[in-house]
Length: 523
Image (cartoon, rainbow, N blue to C red):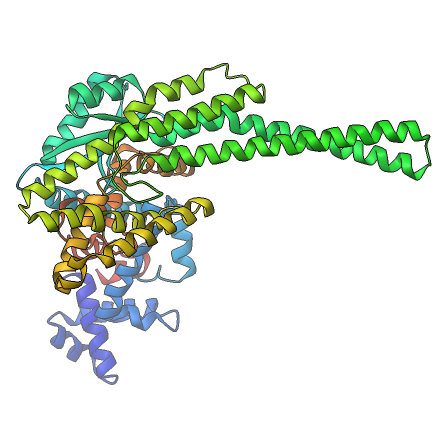
């Protein structure tokens, strides 16, 4: 019997029998009288605050352990707070009388929690039956060491997050292939920037199509035109403000008409230039939105099926518009950014055919009647797709366009005869399937960029991330973080529930340090 259990028995006895003797308490707890007396004295020393009695009970002490573990898990491990700050917090809430919460004691608890989490991963991250197909996004981030990151884009599951000495193809191929084989996964296509090692990884290492990241392509366009328009408009605005102030002063002191006329002409010229630049900026923003809106499996205007050739033609037209803006507004593209984007357009558009091939193969494998298969392709998939897109953007123009497309697709779905005759359970089944299929369309590696941002913040807050802690943070991301629908990345990838990570920690935390000062005499 542990010290804690003996204390709980002595406390329970005297709480139920206030006038009982130490001998009776010892007999009830099955210990010597001297041991019972020492425990009673230790309990009295710990009883310093009005709430102290609660921590002496078995239920209260277990809740106290949960409280300490939750604080360390949320703020120490996930939030990056140091043990000194946590120790100060635990002293503020006055639990130091019943648990060891010094920095050294907390370090022991942190290490134990990390051990439990690593064991959780080994127990639950096992390959499933069959060779599941996934979409990979890859990138690297730089701290004291290079961190290679591969994320399964449809679920958000981190497949690889390890330090490396370099980012060559050989290193990428060795790490990525091992991670995929370990879980029994096969990459259907990979999305990343145009780094040579990553392109080769997709084509040669993983034997799958490589899709250039649409976000990076749009960012190239922004760097080419967005900053130039913003800088020019700000410059003209400053000049116009100065010229307007000068004109006001000329009017105030009744200067000669010729000066006023010349200054008025200058103000009018600057106003015209400002309007011209704003018109150009709006044309650029419209073209940028058109570039992004083109890369969807369904047309934004009539929600019909698109092909990569049609998307390529649209993107080339947008690029032509941007080239005309560069010429009209005398913008210098010294780094040939538009040419760089132009070379990527066929590969960017390829994601449309890759996804449709996957969808068609999946539908054929289900061996459905022709009418039902057509209904899934032309009605259910676009309705679910545009519904998901409306929840993914915060841009007002894009949101309005997506809502319009969703309304049009929804009307088509509801007007189809199959929608009205299918049983509600059958309809929900196909909605779930369509959601799963739609999530397989990924045109950016933003999940990887977001993960790199999180690691960067952690690295800055903690002045470096130890590799052991990096493994633990990967486990938290895969098995601990939940989306609005309540699912973790592991559940979305493997299609099955997993035990709650924190409850697993609480269940397996078996040894927590006790305050040496208040229990030494009771041992």
